[in-house]
Amino acid sequence: MTRSRKDGFALLCRLLDAALLRAHGEDPVATVELPRRIDWRAVIGISGTNLVTPLLGHALETLRLLDTLEEEPRRYFRAMTDAARDRNRILRRDLLRIAVAMERAGIPLLPLKGAIRLLDGLYADDAWRFMHDLDLLVPADRLAAAARVLREGGWRDLEDEPCRFAPHLPPMVHPDSGAVLELHERPVPAWLEHMLPAASLFARARPLRVEGTTLLLPDPADQLLHLVIHGQLMHGHLYTGRLLLRDLVELVRLTQRHGKGMAEEVLRRLETAGHRLAGEVAMATARATLPSAAAPLPAARPAARLLASKAIIQQHSGLLMATLAPVGAVLRERRAHARSTGLLRRLADAGYRRELRAQWRAFRRKTSW
Image 1 (cartoon, rainbow, N blue to C red):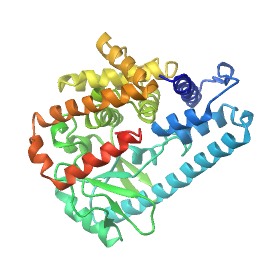
Image 2 (cartoon, rainbow, N blue to C red; image 1 turned 180 degrees about the vertical axis):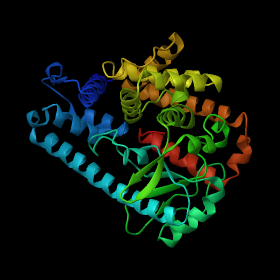
Image 3 (spheres, rainbow, N blue to C red; image 1 turned 30 degrees about the vertical axis):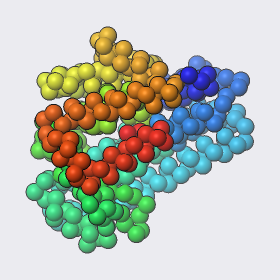
Image 4 (spheres, one colour; image 1 turned 30 degrees about the horizontal axis):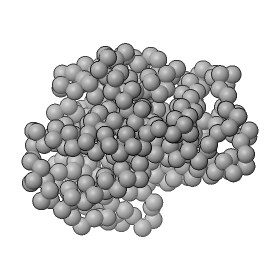
C-alpha cells in the first residue's frame, strides 16, 4: 500500500463528496481544505481509473479551489472539463438525431446509463458524467428495423463478429461522430434479465419531449436498479472488489433527487431476485467513500459493510487488486454460467473471447471492468 495512493483516493473522495453536497443545495466550502502537499499525479491516476477526472476538475472549480493550484494541474483540469463538456454535447446531438430517425420509423427508443444523463438534468454540468458511448434500448421485435435505420443514417458495425451472449448488437460508429453506439434489445445479459426485463422497463418509462422529438426515460428506480446490476453483477464488482466512483456518484445523485424510498424499493426488488447483497454493497461503498452526501442511503448489514471496506482497501494496494480481482472475476463467471450457457460453449464464441481479452486489458490498465 502506498501512502500517496491512499491519500490521493481519500482526497478525491472528499472533493467529490463536497461537490455532491453542493449539487444538493448545501454549502461545503468551509469544510474543504486542500493539503499543503498533494501528489497530483497519483490523484489524477486514481480519478482516471474511476472515470471522474472531469468531475474532479469541476468540483475544484465549484469549490473555489482550482485557482489555488499550480499552473500545470490547473490547466490540466480545465482542459479535461472542457473536453468532457464538448464530448457530451456531441453525444447529445447524436442521440437526438437518432431519436428523430427512430420516431419517424415508429420505433420506441429508451436511453440507458449515461445517455439518460444527457437529457434528464440530473447533473447541472456536462463535466459531471464521463461517457464512453451511447447505450440505447429498443423493443426486441424492432431491433432489426432499428439497426436498418441506423445503417441508413451512416452508422456502421465496429466489429464483424458479435458476441452471441451480449445484450446488444455489435458496437456501431459514424464517420461524423466521435460516439460509439450500442443498440440493445435488453438492458442486461440473459442471466440477469429476470430482474430487469426490457418489457418492464418500457412499461414503467415516461415520455420526454426534447427539441421536437420524443424519447422514453426509464423510471428512476429502474435507473438505480440497472446501475447496481451493471456494476455489481454484470461487471462483477461484488466479486472482484473493484469500485467505480463515477457509478457511486450517480447512485448518490439519484437518491438525492428521488429520495431514500427509491433506494429502499431497489433493495426490495433485489432481495426478491436473490441479489440484495449486490445493492447493499453498492450503497455501503457509497456511504464509505462519499459519507456526507450518501448519509441518507439505507444502512447495510455487516456482510455488505465488510465487502465495501475490502473494496476500499483494494483501491489502496495494486498488489491486492491484482491478486483478488481476477479470482473474483472467475467467481463471477461461474455465477453467470450457473443458469445459462456453459463456459466451454461460451469460449467457442469468437465475440465472447474478444470481450474477455478486452476486459483483461482494461484490468491491466486499472480501468473499470
